[in-house]
Length: 169
Image (cartoon, rainbow, N blue to C red):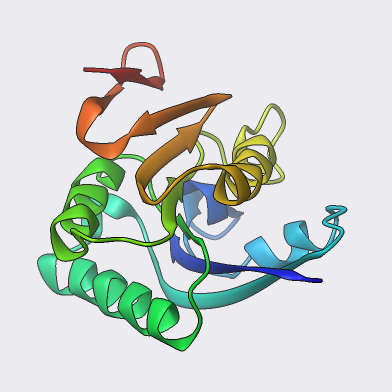
């Protein structure tokens, strides 16, 4: 029997690419599906939906509402875990908004991202994506942040820029 995981993509560093034109990393294309295709996920159907392709510092409250609405639609369509790929700078803010919007969750919502884009040397993106898919199958209902081999309840975590990782509050 196949287990479904809804994956909603918001952009962020995990999906950035290097632009030769500007000499910067930018959100310009969908990379998640290419990387999912490289994983061995027996008995798992990952249904991907692109919501936006933004750096999380550029996300607005309207963008966060798009995420909330998409999660609501996916959970109403078929109750299954939800993984949200998101930029790390405001990931916690979006997670708290989801926790507020869904006080009686019956499935886990996992937020993940990367400090270095997928495909770049030493990227943490594929590790975090893989761990979030595993966590989606194992964690109880609630809103969680999964990165760097760690799991945090969304209300008990913050990004530590100096350490380039998330830490418990």
